[in-house]
Each structure stands twice: as C-alpha cells, then as structure tokens.
Image (cartoon, rainbow, N blue to C red):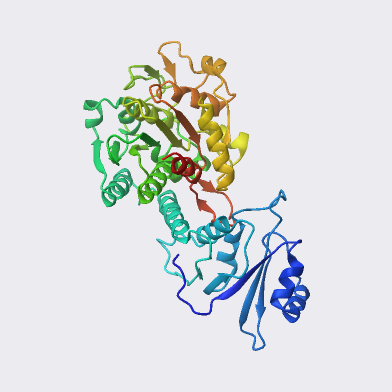
Length: 455
C-alpha cells in the first residue's frame, strides 16, 4: 500500500449515469464502443478493462452510483483492488468522494496471508491529487493491523500474544506500559477478569498503557480481549464456537484506534485498557450461580458463564473510570442480540451524552463507518437484578439483550465525563468492496474522526 513509482500508471475512469457522456468523450469513441459492446454500464461496482491497439491494458472504467442514490457505496472503489490485475494505476478523473474512494482501494488490498504460501502481486495506486494519501495509508495500515489480530487463530493469538501486540504498539510510540497477570489480578483488584480467565492454560491478564502529555484531555479506550470463547461451563455448541477466535475484536478495535491517535499525534492523554482472557473449562472454571465481588465493590452473580465479556469489561471500566476521563469508549463483541437487531454491518452504540451521540452519528456518515445509536432504556435495569447479589450477568428476560448488556456496563463506567459502548461484530460474513470475508474493524474510524475534530 504505497504510492506507485510508475511513470505511466494505467488510468481509472469513474463513471456514473450522469457523467458517462463526458467520460466517453475523454476515453475516445473506439474505447467507448468497446466498453458498451462488452456490456459495461455506469453502475455501482462495474469494472471494464480497456485494451489499446496491441491488446495491452490501456485504461479501466469503474461504475459508480450517484452520491444521492441508496446503492452508492463511498468505499466501493475497494472493488478495484480485487478486480484489477497487478500493476500501477491512477485516478484519471475525480470520483464522487475522492478521500473515501482512495481509502476504499487501499482497504480492499487487505489479505490475511500469514499461513498461506501464495502471496500474489496486487494492483498499486498512485497518490491521487487533492487527497491526503499519507493519512489514507496510515488508516489502511491501522485497519490491517486490527484485522490481522481478529483473523489470527486462537492457537496463534493466545492471551500472551495479544498482550505482546499491545505492548509492542505502546513501545513503538513511547507509551508507558504495565500489565497484571494471573493471580496478580487479585492483588491488583481485578477479580472478575481473574474469574473469567483462570480456567485457561494461559493466565488471564489486564494490560494498561498511557501515551501523551499528562495534562492533556483524558481519552480512555477499553477493549474486550477474549481470545477464544468456549462459553465456559455453559459451553457453546460447536456451531457457536466456529467464529469465537474473533471474540477479541473489541481489543483489536481499541488498539487500532489507539494506533490512529498516536500516529496522528493528537493532543490527548490516551489510556488503553485491555482485559485479556480465554474463556475455557477446567477445575478452576467459574460456575453458574457463583458470586464474585467486582473491582467496584458490586457483587455479581454469574448467571451464565457464556456472558463473560461484560464481566471482564466491568472491572476494566471501573478501573478506567477511577481517573474520571473526559471521554471513555469501550468496544466489545458482546451480544448476538445486536446482530439480530441491526445485522453484521451496523454496530449499535450506547451513550447518555447527547453531544457525543450527535458527533458519532455525523462522523459515521462522513467517513463511511456505519454505527447506530440504541437506547440505554432504564426500565430494563430490572432484567439484570439478582435475587442474591447486586446484579447478574445473565438477564432474566430474553428480550433486549444488547440493551441490558449496555445497562450492566453503565454501572461500572460511572465517573467518566462521557462514555459510549460499542457492541461490535468485528467480522465480514461475506466479502465487501473494502475488505474480504473475515475480521473487520468497525467503529474505530468514526471514533477517530471525532477525536481528531476535538483534539
């Protein structure tokens, strides 16, 4: 993903129904007749290769929908990354959204090939004019970093390996790093993190790093780092475990966002808190009906060992909130209910801060990073009441699972001046224009956009 050094990159012409006549005139009548004879239509995602008189590649047509059309995809140019042969390319005219078309192309180049021998050549994009190409490359590299973490199998991305990735990121940017591992979690008062991860072969841990000047506005990121989720004693069926290597997608998102913040040099005091566990089974595994006292002091009944993500986040959020950050964001692959409500591509977020909600909604549209606000509906607090403890991690009702999970977390985020929770899927169930099937980083670009505008 670097700017091409070619002196003669192949031109890519963007065409819509309204601009097709102009583009025809620019590519010439012979090329236009060839394209139409080959069935090209100036519609979203259509690609047509144009030969010269010798049969060599002379140009490319790419169909876009009008920006106002419901089928318009701002990142749709990512399809070029998989639809073009290897070589050097340039934008010959201006796409509907030049910045997003550039980013879409760069994101579309991503491949998870760590375990593959075949690493074939890919197309390369020359930096378009009037686009901050360096910023687009930084974003694409950060997203690739996060996608790599999500795609890694659990035998490669163990708790210690995820910690190593976080520590390396902190060190590269000069952050101050610390971690609490194994029984040290109890000594440091992270009992829920310990309870969830103690059954695994590798010890649970919580990593914590800070970056930026100490008196800058405090921005804290928390990410759920469950490297594999068997469900614990409430074990999942095999079909439910199939994608559970991605249950650390919240951690990958928080680290991706942290990388964007640090590389951009935003004027913030950044803190990143990642509780890391494998939810496994052994003689030390937590049991349904156990009661564990949280860092905040609330007694939590373990109603279901497969609702482990909110448990480790509870201790991490309570810890993060103790220094009263100006902004606290947490990211987690938390509930199936969120997917039922909004599907895999549209993660819900929850906040009681109206300004933050409006800023996130606006940023989501501007950078084509879909998120959707859902309510922290207080009457549903009754669903997570426990008969024997302060709260249960397993709602009594089958309804509103994403809302009740957010309400559970809200109790532990008190103290932050503003807080938002993102319930992610972190996966493309099928190929997208801007990325293949597999791990995906959601909400990080929208969150970065508001941080960049504020700081």
